[in-house]
Image 1 (cartoon, rainbow over the protein chains, first blue to last red):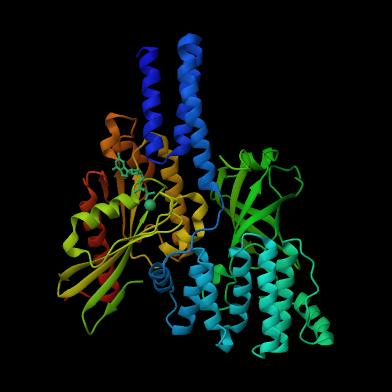
Image 2: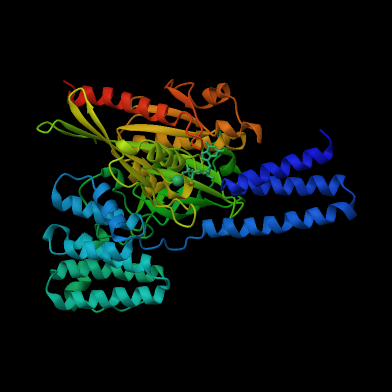
Length: 329
Length: 203
Ligand SMILES: Nc1nc2c(ncn2[C@@H]2O[C@H](COP(=O)(O)OP(=O)(O)O)[C@@H](O)[C@H]2O)c(=O)[nH]1
Ligand SMILES: [Mg+2]
């Protein structure tokens, strides 16, 4: 194949990948085509082509960053929300199924509707606390700015203080939970408590009882109820420490931040400088020496690598993403 | 998660189309929707936003009529393929009775196919299911594209994906429809046989 033909072929491939939505693949091919042209075609003939390709690459970059934008998913039509609520609730009793449905709505980013559903669940004693926490979390997940989220959540909490729906103990747990949500957003707040002195004692109790569902959740979007799938039951982890076992040498602990947690799965960002770690990671690998750091407790355990991939776009590009399934000892 | 209603002799099962992003899962369902109008029970719900940031899923309910004296209904779903939507993907997979794994024949997607199959294995485990036991079909999609870009041979894909599983596979083109019906029918067959053991639904 002559060089002209080769360039044409590469460009045609790039176009096909682009139309198929395989943007990263298209990008690689476009860049390769540019290289080929720059190396093999006289500048006066090639410049024009390369400029055209550069424009396409720019457009692709925009498209890719749009796709990776953690922008809030749009609120769906009611019929679709109903479908989500109906199809993704698996519990057999009606009340638990309603909770499942509301949680599914949050997983699909349908926060306003989810708040409505959780408010219904407040009427049921057994779900009251978990529903309240979820409502607060929905406020944070759905707002575009943390200050408006905080406003909404605090307003809600104050309303609950006056309603007489919750026991003082429950209100205390909610306050503790909300303060942590706020702190995460860098907002220190002195929320009014239900009863001042009792509050201090209750907080201590809550703090000692880790891991407990009263614990502040750090990353996951939703509060998982106490019953149901045990795979989802795991304390909220803010960072994970890994000690690699390579030969006899004792390796230092590598601390990684959690970017997302769902049940006992955490997604960790591995900086590109952690060469040893990056070299040894692969899906399925078991790590026997792992520490899970939560705001209250540190647990020893192990982990299984579920996925390990290089981040190919966005602000963390070039670093690695490590999905780890956590097990405590 | 199939529901068997003994009184009405009605069975409803769930089939999930799994696979890497852009492998053609939605296109499969679209073709089925167009082609098997009579069996389609209701509108197909496609919840793609902005072209395809498939954060969501597709949903297609079908009624297959009477099979061995039982009214068979099936609900088809697709999962969001993009790596980052792991938690919604798991939610859609939950309760699946049968799975169609749609692999992309593009050579450039070779690794993505393998990663997605691994991801399926992992997620099934987390749902308490076993990839070697659940009814599973592999579909090697986009066979039509071979003229214009590099695609993998069936042997290569078999070697990559089906060496251990040894499940039925179909070369296909969701765009032209080739292999789409065959894939679904085979998956339905395996699923119903599988469910027979559990429910004894067939007369
Ligand atoms: N050439 C070709 N393109 C296909 C085929 N199936 C899907 N596509 C294209 O691949 C892209 C992604 O398909 P889609 O069904 O949205 O993939 P999904 O992410 O798996 O749902 C679209 O541009 C489709 O037109 C096929 O069989 N042949
Ligand atoms: Mg799709």
